[in-house]
Amino acid sequence: MKKIIFFIIIIAIIALGFFAVSNVKQKSKNNSEKLTVVTTLFPLYDFVKAVGQDKVEVSLLLPPGVEAHSFEPKPSDIVKINESDLFVYTGKFMEPWAEDIIKGLVSKDVNVVDSSMGIELMKGAEEANEAEHAGEHAFEWAGSFTLAPGDYEWSFAKVDGKYADPAMKMVVLKTVSESADGIKEVRELAEKLLTQNVLKLTAGEMVKPSEVAYELTFDEKSDITKFKVSITEAGNYTFFTEHVPTEFEADEHFFKNVALADVEPRATEPESSEHHHHHGGLDPHIWLGLDNAQVMVENIASSLIVSDPANTDYYRKNADEYKARLLRLDEKYRTGLTQCKSRKIVYGGHYAFGYMANRYGLIYTAAQGFSPDSEPTANDLVSMVEQIKNNNIKYVFYEELASPKIAETLANETGAKLLLLNGAHNITKGDLEKNVSFLSIMEENLVNLKTGLDCSK
Image: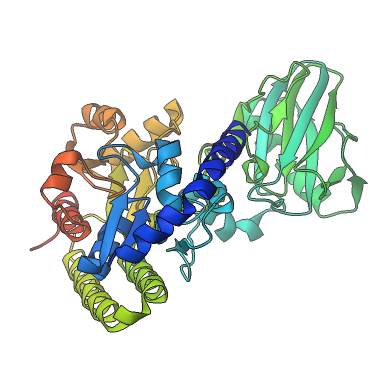
């Protein structure tokens, strides 16, 4: 909410100035032979440079060396976008702040380019696993809580403007056992209840532990729907839900006590489902799939042609040549990663390489969710250490422009070595001065992957 208010204020301030200088801006555009293009991330910057070449003046919003997920635009960035011919971004799941800027654009002449158009976004590892096994249980998630007597609040929020489903089934059962044993104790009963008749509840009504399945219906007119949970006796309680609660989690934790403090489960099934709900459960790192990168280049070329039809043949030729280079690199990855002793990538950073792993048949485990701000639990780290030891993994990969402390911890605990796997979100000032390219970054990634996975030459 604070971010929304911030953007509204900034855009309102900028609007006052733009009407006064609109004539000057028009004059400068008429006198310029180049299209001015503002991009959000380094891959987009490099793609525009490759396609537009000397017909464009391209800039990167991200300052050199800044981690992409933590970036927030300054008022001067918003002015720059308003003064550009094209604004190119990855999509709302990677740059959610861009949506507010687009809505508040003063200049209607800016050609807004969503480079993800035509690309099917993947679910994260946990979300995909849930979808794969959805038919095995009547519930997708179970959480065991130790609760004191009192009233609690379970909330469901719209994510990206809508609820994940208009309603959801829930069963709450008291157990003798706690944590994972509590879930096992009543799992069979919960399965049975969830397949029988349900008691329908609407916003504000009360859920009580009992042998009944509730169907909670959400208020479509409200961004958040809340239900009360009444606990009359201290003890262990297991909640079984038709969907993972974090699918309905926006800014607030889904379960709170009467003091509005977060209430966390002692155990969940699946174990780590609550730790990886980012970007609505969809992976925004599309450029790391080289097939997706070709689509992004095509989207950029088409938009340049719309803004500058006189140079259609020029943009088309450059785009086709660059896509051919991406295709050759894609084939190089495919052949280079075919004969490897290991197919497991252990990444001590955030979940960014799902598209790459999927394309080349690799098994990918990341310590964090889609954002570097997400923190792994102690159990997550123990599990990864065991995985490294059990599979005799020799290398742990770390990410660029972020602290490698997680990767270093995993390496120190297992004796593994460290290798960089660069997500190419952004580059350092030094790399920018050296004209480091997206293709060169991906070439280096392939070299490191072949080393880390022990691939034959």
